[in-house]
Image 1 (cartoon, rainbow, N blue to C red):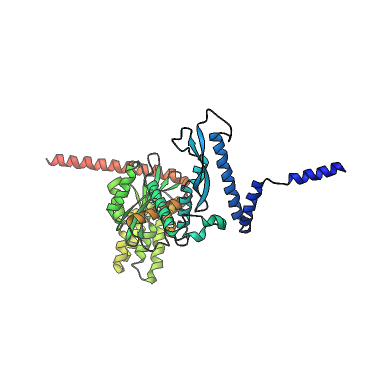
Image 2 (image 1 turned 135 degrees about the horizontal axis):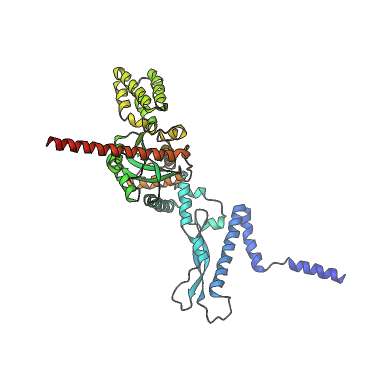
Length: 438
């Protein structure tokens, strides 16, 4: 009987919690009523406090024990802030100073959780997802009324400052990427219109089929000066202008001129979708389907000479009734067949005969910019576009037909060698003619 009473007393004693623990659990009751996330936040902040105290013990030593070799001492507590769910939350942090009292000793645990970079990433993600600075606070997770009451960095101005800083960093990251060890197969150029401003962007495709945003340049229009500046910057960052690269462009003469200025007579593929739209725009509705079918049939023809003959015949027929359409078709017509001339076919040809891979990236960029009502400066346009391009990169997959890229690279090198040989032979013949005339 007495033993049973002792067991009951022991059992009762075991469930009695220390006063400090009971007090902590009592504070969490209110958080539990606000939801599981708020409860988890309360527990997490409590764990953080314990981790900080444990690190103090590691640095200073146990409290109340003399240590002649102690290199640091406790220095009370101070106010601090940590990043939590896209906001800054006030915490009480222990302070430690060197034994000689000259300097504050940094606690790694606190520095990790106090890092503002996590806050900047959350702000960037939400803004690019379409959350406005005015509504940012509403998107925050419910972390509990007590925690929320002391939260900071959620006001419209604070979010704006954080976003500007983070997008400026994104622009710097994009424009400083080194290209020394990058082996490219394709480089696509396209323009993004932003209320009278144009950002010319460059998207690379490596020999493994990986898409990489390389950079962008801002100007009033998609002109040769802007495009040349962008391509020259890529060369300065390590891109070898001598390596064989296929350029894919929308057909803009300015882009073609810039490629010639920086990379010489590199092979250029004109986007067939852009060419198709340009020609069709010159035709009445009744003739558009027929002409579109004939153009697509020619571009699908695997024999280069036959394909060129079909397009030339169509241009001659259009000349009589629709000279504007004929002129549009003839402009850069041979460069719409560059892949055919290089004997590239199948899925890789369908991927590279248009700027669709670059357009897909720009579509993501436009989606991230949908809430922007006014572009106050060119720097703002560059920041937003760079951030959007890096956001798009997270969703990239290897291009369709990437297994045949090695064949494309060999064909490009062969084409460049033939061009250089012809140029040398032409120069030699011309010099011989001059000498003979003398």
